[in-house]
Image 1 (cartoon, rainbow, N blue to C red):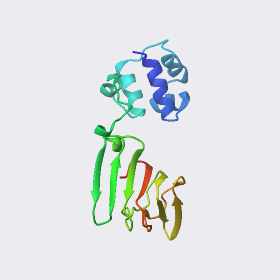
Image 2: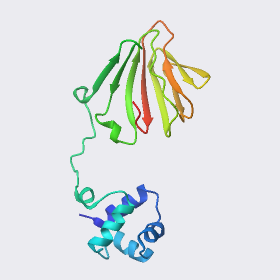
Image 3: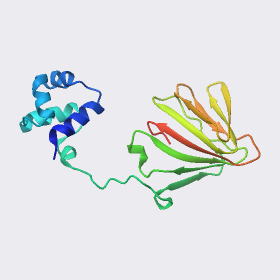
Image 4: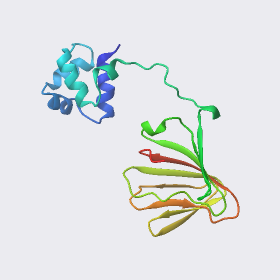
Length: 179
Protein backbone atom coordinates (compact mmCIF):
# COMPACT_ATOMS: atom_id res chain seq x y z
CA UNK A 1 0.00 0.00 0.00
CA UNK A 2 1.22 3.50 -0.89
CA UNK A 3 0.58 5.09 2.53
CA UNK A 4 2.25 8.39 1.64
CA UNK A 5 0.38 8.73 -1.64
CA UNK A 6 -2.93 7.95 0.01
CA UNK A 7 -2.32 10.54 2.74
CA UNK A 8 -1.42 13.10 0.06
CA UNK A 9 -4.62 12.36 -1.90
CA UNK A 10 -6.71 12.70 1.24
CA UNK A 11 -4.96 15.95 2.23
CA UNK A 12 -5.63 17.43 -1.21
CA UNK A 13 -9.29 16.29 -1.08
CA UNK A 14 -9.60 18.19 2.22
CA UNK A 15 -7.98 21.21 0.53
CA UNK A 16 -5.17 21.36 3.07
CA UNK A 17 -1.59 22.36 2.36
CA UNK A 18 1.25 20.29 3.80
CA UNK A 19 1.89 23.12 6.24
CA UNK A 20 -1.76 23.26 7.39
CA UNK A 21 -1.83 19.50 7.98
CA UNK A 22 1.52 19.66 9.80
CA UNK A 23 0.33 22.50 12.06
CA UNK A 24 -2.90 20.70 12.96
CA UNK A 25 -0.93 17.55 13.85
CA UNK A 26 1.88 19.47 15.60
CA UNK A 27 4.40 18.10 13.11
CA UNK A 28 6.81 19.76 10.69
CA UNK A 29 5.99 20.45 7.07
CA UNK A 30 9.17 18.54 6.16
CA UNK A 31 7.91 15.44 7.98
CA UNK A 32 4.60 15.57 6.05
CA UNK A 33 6.51 15.97 2.79
CA UNK A 34 8.77 13.00 3.57
CA UNK A 35 5.75 10.94 4.63
CA UNK A 36 3.84 11.72 1.41
CA UNK A 37 6.90 10.73 -0.62
CA UNK A 38 7.31 7.49 1.37
CA UNK A 39 10.72 8.60 2.66
CA UNK A 40 9.68 8.07 6.29
CA UNK A 41 7.05 6.14 8.21
CA UNK A 42 4.91 7.57 10.99
CA UNK A 43 4.42 5.96 14.37
CA UNK A 44 0.96 4.49 14.93
CA UNK A 45 0.09 7.39 17.27
CA UNK A 46 1.20 9.95 14.65
CA UNK A 47 -0.70 8.14 11.88
CA UNK A 48 -3.85 8.12 14.04
CA UNK A 49 -3.48 11.90 14.59
CA UNK A 50 -3.01 12.55 10.86
CA UNK A 51 -5.96 10.36 9.90
CA UNK A 52 -8.15 12.04 12.51
CA UNK A 53 -7.41 15.45 10.94
CA UNK A 54 -8.17 13.95 7.51
CA UNK A 55 -11.54 12.69 8.73
CA UNK A 56 -10.88 8.94 8.83
CA UNK A 57 -9.46 6.24 11.06
CA UNK A 58 -7.03 3.32 10.79
CA UNK A 59 -9.70 0.78 9.81
CA UNK A 60 -11.12 2.90 6.98
CA UNK A 61 -7.66 3.98 5.82
CA UNK A 62 -6.36 0.42 5.44
CA UNK A 63 -9.62 -1.01 4.11
CA UNK A 64 -8.89 -0.80 0.40
CA UNK A 65 -11.97 -1.21 -1.72
CA UNK A 66 -10.78 -2.28 -5.14
CA UNK A 67 -14.14 -3.51 -6.35
CA UNK A 68 -16.08 -0.27 -5.90
CA UNK A 69 -18.99 -0.33 -8.31
CA UNK A 70 -18.90 2.46 -10.88
CA UNK A 71 -21.55 1.40 -13.39
CA UNK A 72 -25.18 0.64 -12.65
CA UNK A 73 -28.00 -1.15 -14.47
CA UNK A 74 -31.78 -0.86 -14.21
CA UNK A 75 -31.70 -3.65 -11.61
CA UNK A 76 -29.55 -1.45 -9.34
CA UNK A 77 -31.97 1.48 -9.46
CA UNK A 78 -34.76 2.08 -6.98
CA UNK A 79 -38.07 3.77 -7.78
CA UNK A 80 -40.78 5.29 -5.60
CA UNK A 81 -44.05 6.99 -6.42
CA UNK A 82 -46.26 9.65 -4.81
CA UNK A 83 -49.77 9.37 -6.26
CA UNK A 84 -51.03 12.52 -4.50
CA UNK A 85 -48.33 14.78 -5.93
CA UNK A 86 -48.23 12.76 -9.20
CA UNK A 87 -44.53 12.02 -9.43
CA UNK A 88 -42.15 9.06 -9.67
CA UNK A 89 -38.63 9.23 -8.37
CA UNK A 90 -35.86 6.92 -9.63
CA UNK A 91 -32.50 6.82 -7.86
CA UNK A 92 -29.88 6.24 -10.56
CA UNK A 93 -27.09 5.28 -8.14
CA UNK A 94 -27.91 2.97 -5.21
CA UNK A 95 -27.09 4.35 -1.77
CA UNK A 96 -26.13 7.69 -3.30
CA UNK A 97 -27.19 9.49 -0.12
CA UNK A 98 -23.75 8.53 1.27
CA UNK A 99 -22.00 10.27 -1.64
CA UNK A 100 -21.43 13.97 -2.27
CA UNK A 101 -24.11 14.13 -4.95
CA UNK A 102 -27.35 12.30 -5.61
CA UNK A 103 -28.61 11.85 -9.20
CA UNK A 104 -32.25 10.95 -9.81
CA UNK A 105 -34.80 10.97 -12.62
CA UNK A 106 -38.10 12.50 -11.63
CA UNK A 107 -41.19 11.95 -13.76
CA UNK A 108 -44.04 14.41 -13.24
CA UNK A 109 -47.51 13.63 -14.55
CA UNK A 110 -49.56 16.59 -15.92
CA UNK A 111 -50.50 18.72 -12.89
CA UNK A 112 -47.85 16.99 -10.77
CA UNK A 113 -45.13 18.48 -8.62
CA UNK A 114 -42.27 17.41 -6.41
CA UNK A 115 -42.50 18.24 -2.71
CA UNK A 116 -41.28 21.66 -1.65
CA UNK A 117 -37.83 21.65 -0.05
CA UNK A 118 -36.47 24.15 2.43
CA UNK A 119 -33.20 26.06 1.84
CA UNK A 120 -30.03 24.04 2.38
CA UNK A 121 -26.33 24.08 1.66
CA UNK A 122 -25.09 22.78 -1.67
CA UNK A 123 -26.14 23.04 -5.29
CA UNK A 124 -28.77 21.55 -7.58
CA UNK A 125 -28.72 20.79 -11.29
CA UNK A 126 -31.43 19.51 -13.59
CA UNK A 127 -31.85 18.64 -17.26
CA UNK A 128 -35.31 18.27 -18.79
CA UNK A 129 -35.52 15.06 -20.84
CA UNK A 130 -39.20 15.36 -21.83
CA UNK A 131 -41.99 17.92 -21.52
CA UNK A 132 -41.47 21.15 -19.62
CA UNK A 133 -41.51 22.16 -15.98
CA UNK A 134 -41.73 25.20 -13.78
CA UNK A 135 -38.82 25.60 -11.35
CA UNK A 136 -40.10 27.42 -8.24
CA UNK A 137 -37.34 29.24 -6.33
CA UNK A 138 -38.85 31.27 -3.50
CA UNK A 139 -41.28 33.68 -5.19
CA UNK A 140 -39.72 33.23 -8.65
CA UNK A 141 -40.96 30.83 -11.35
CA UNK A 142 -38.72 29.69 -14.20
CA UNK A 143 -40.01 27.68 -17.15
CA UNK A 144 -37.58 24.98 -18.29
CA UNK A 145 -38.31 23.06 -21.52
CA UNK A 146 -37.08 19.78 -23.00
CA UNK A 147 -33.37 20.05 -23.78
CA UNK A 148 -32.83 22.87 -21.29
CA UNK A 149 -31.23 22.75 -17.86
CA UNK A 150 -31.24 24.54 -14.53
CA UNK A 151 -28.58 25.10 -11.89
CA UNK A 152 -28.99 26.91 -8.58
CA UNK A 153 -27.88 27.20 -4.98
CA UNK A 154 -30.91 26.27 -2.86
CA UNK A 155 -31.06 29.40 -0.68
CA UNK A 156 -34.89 29.57 -0.79
CA UNK A 157 -37.76 27.08 -0.68
CA UNK A 158 -37.83 25.26 -4.01
CA UNK A 159 -39.63 22.60 -6.05
CA UNK A 160 -40.57 21.74 -9.61
CA UNK A 161 -44.04 21.36 -11.10
CA UNK A 162 -45.59 20.28 -14.39
CA UNK A 163 -48.48 22.55 -15.37
CA UNK A 164 -48.50 21.07 -18.91
CA UNK A 165 -50.64 18.40 -20.51
CA UNK A 166 -47.78 15.95 -21.15
CA UNK A 167 -45.55 13.97 -18.81
CA UNK A 168 -42.27 15.69 -17.89
CA UNK A 169 -39.00 13.88 -17.06
CA UNK A 170 -36.00 15.52 -15.44
CA UNK A 171 -32.52 14.29 -14.50
CA UNK A 172 -31.88 16.05 -11.21
CA UNK A 173 -28.63 16.09 -9.24
CA UNK A 174 -28.46 17.44 -5.70
CA UNK A 175 -25.41 18.05 -3.56
CA UNK A 176 -25.44 17.18 -0.76
CA UNK A 177 -28.00 14.39 -1.24
CA UNK A 178 -31.52 15.48 -0.31
CA UNK A 179 -34.01 13.23 -2.10
